[in-house]
Length: 281
Length: 285
Image (tube, rainbow over all chains, first blue to last red; front, side):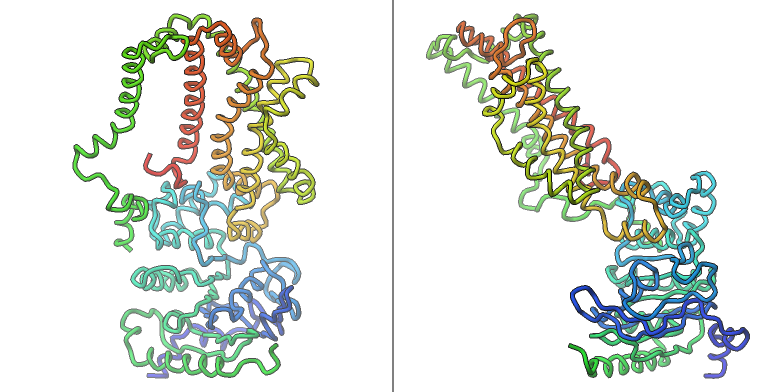
């Protein structure tokens, strides 16, 4: 059982074949807010350049969203560094096109159609609407919204708005997709459906996904690696591989393997929460 | 997936419809709900006409609505030039406020210093009654037409500035982050994000200012009291009052009200047209 599982996991296949050169390398990243709160302490994390689905799991207020913002370049770290060893950009420059960001809310422009919302990143890069048409329709098809290009956001359900948001993040063909609790506000049925669609997308597109969540069940179902973050200050308390094969389905969700993983992650999280940072204020 | 798609078109959130106790159930009730304001108006006007006739109130005290309507039609040739003058002052002041307010609102969001320096004076200008400063402005400015314009502009200006400033500042933070992430220029962020975000607020400001510009123009005309060919409806009201031509006075008043209503309706239509696809304020139109 375990043997076959390992062979099918993408992370195993790639780490053994290529020279290890991570997509992003966080080196002892720390963040202290202006009011003196220490949000993150000595976060060191390598995100490999082969497709990986990494979840950042932790209680609310543990700094996992801050960490995501630092990775995206929207925020800066107070100490340490974020490096992009495979990037053509120099270390200081923000790796613009390489990152897609999906916010907690759909964050769509209500005055723009679905098409124009997805076209936005290309428009900001100076691409003409006509030239962008094919690419926009392609990503809309990926999120199963190709029939809704001319609809306005207010005509869509919450789940569909989130799909538009994902399509917009994918339109520039990023290597890295950052997602900040994207499905937290959705109902469970929609969320499960979007989880499955996201996995499908991730496998087909060869992306690396960093997925922030506070749901143990969601992170185990989606990820092949879970980074557990403890609170006050935010720090990495466990880095857990989820060695279960993809594609994952409803069957996996009810399997004993899944339950075993959930129990393990849960125990790590609990241990982390019961042991706050020694010198925290 | 397909379950979600079915929701398209039935997207009216539950909280959009009035609470159950306040909905009008039967079709008769619905008709009544539609007709109620009109019925009240008819009742009011009918009562007015009846009292004037039964009590035989002289026309120089209170003319009946039918007489006022009749005067409006027969005296329309006299009133029209006044209407045009008032309307011109109102529209010019409104346009100046619409553009000036937008520009100053933009300036406020670009520079905190400009906002800190100028905003208190915009407030002072707004809270000082226009009746009190109109005489000064009319004394200081030689050209009466321009003086009237300035008065109307002062009244109409503030709602647009403050609404524009609020609108520009209430842009979705996440969308601003998204623009930053894709390296958008300041110009792109302004035209593609901030101005569209501010549009509903700006239009709300326009709707308030349209009526205020008319009020400002009429108040200033009252204070100026100019006669001759360049006089507006307010002057006609004053003059009719002196001559005890009360029906004409009421007709002029009616014309001012109709003008105000027309301005409001036009601006509401413009607002609903521009926001028809995306904003809750234009929902269900």
